Structure formats: C-alpha cells, structure tokens
Length: 142
Length: 217
Image 1 (spheres, chains in turn green, blue):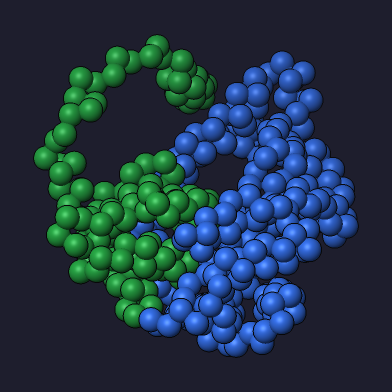
Image 2: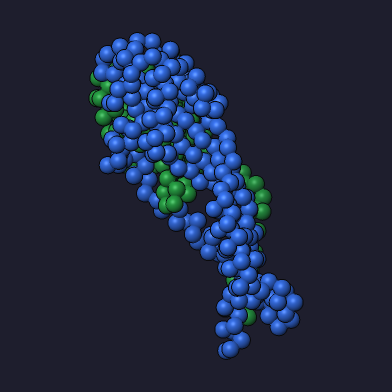
C-alpha cells in the first residue's frame, strides 16, 4: 500500500510542478556567450557568388529535396521558413529558418537556424549535412 | 497474495473499482501508470537523430523526378500565375506567394471521415465490451491538403523553368476513450503524398493551361 501511495504522491508532485510560480528571467538572457558565437559560426556559411537570389532559390530547392514544406519565403529579405514532421512515428516537428544576405565582399552568406520540437538544434553535424545538400543544389542550378 | 494479483490484472471495470470498498488502489493505479509511462516516453521522442533531418535519402532523387517538370518558357510570373490558376481549379486556396523566390503555397480543407475507420471503431468498441472496458478508438475527422510549388530556372538558362510541386496531407483525429482514460481530440499526423497519378494530373492541367508540353527532368 505504501508503494502505491508513493507512486500516487510522485504523480501528484509531477503534476504540481507545472503550477510553480513564474521564474525570474535569467540575467544573461540576451547576453552573447561564447557558446552562442560558436553555434553561429557553424550555422553560417559563405558562398562565392553575388547572386543571393540564386542562393535563396538553391536553399528552397535543397529544403524541398530534404522533404521540408516551405511555409514562408521573402525574396527581398532573403528569408525562408520551412518545416517537416520527423523522428519516431513522425511525432516531432523540425522547423528551419534560413536567411541569405549578400556581404560587402561580394559573397552570399547563408545563416540557418533549426529547431526540433521548439528546442534549438546545436549539433554541428546537422548544419554540416544541410550545407552539403545546399552545395549540391547550388551546383545543379549552375 | 491472491488479492494483489487480481489488482494487477486490467479486468476491473471502472464502476467496480469506484464502488469497491476494499480496493481504492484500482482508482489510483490506473491513471497514475499511464501518466508516469507518458512522462518517461516523452523523453524518447527527443532521442530521434537530428543529424538525419538534413540528410538526403536514396529516394530523394526519385521523389524529385516525380514532383518536377520542365517547361520551355521565359516568363516566370506567367508560369506562377498559371500554376495558381490550376491549383484554384483543383479547389485550393492560395495562402502564400512570393514571385521573386518563385514560391506558391496553397491548401484545401476536407473531411477525413472514412467508412472503414468508423466500422473499425465500432468493432473495437464491441471487442472492448468483452473486456468490460469502454474503448472508443479516435478516428480521422478533418484533413488539410497542402501544396507547395516552386519554380526555378535551369542551369544558367532562363528560357527553361522547372516547376516542382509537393503535396502533403495533415490529418486531425477526433476524441476517444480508453477505459478510464479520455483521449482528447486534435491528435495530428502528417504525410507527404507520393502518388504519381496526382502529380501527373496536376502537370497535365498545367501544360494544358500553358499550351506547352511538360518535360520530365
């Protein structure tokens, strides 16, 4: 009986955990940390082309190749957002935002942010795979 | 010892556990177990391999060929507006368009009810009655069919454009019941449509509206 009670109490505690009062936002919420700089570096890649519209179209093409559904695109801003269901039993949702900008050095800079179940993906391998696919898409269009 | 074993077996009906004076455990145990199991299993979804999200699969090339056609024309705007018109003919509402990126997104809402699922639901309910459990299996209620269309000119050649369209389907389930547990409605599932006939029909309509032959890529 004690065991059952313990399981019940554990269940109640877990449910009540949601009721905890709002926490103060951490003070470093908007601070730029080393980790963030590192993440930004592997989320970004520069391509030797001035035609950022072509790069944007290659981004859209590679996202389609990867089975993403394009949700929004804005050419003047160089912005694309896309999503797909993934993971076990397609229970998770991957969201990706890509921004293409032309740099002063006449290159195009591609920045990718990916989320899985609203949690940022911070694995460099994931972004590497995306850029491999993008390079292929850019190469095909040339 | 015997009493404990009978408590574990899931044969106690909801009513008997509520009225039974000797075993409040039935009332406690069954809702708690799914909650704890649910909490443990929610961790497993995170274990999906993110590095595979951006990896091309062996089927990628096949799917691309299925979803793309090439048209010999110079006006991308005309190609996009003809595509929008074809999607409208097919009952889609255009939701998003960006000419400079060659993107068009459209959707249509339809009922997802199917007779077979309702028969299955009835059968499961009857079978559940033998186990003294009210089991109502959630069935598909509503679906949204989405289309994402992208145009792109081919290999430094603005006289030929590739049109790629991707059809997908989102399905929402209704509510259900599993013994004591109520299954809330709104469970969502999604699939990309790979039926060649659907793509063939779309491109046939698009060629007709452009007076051009679509070419396989």
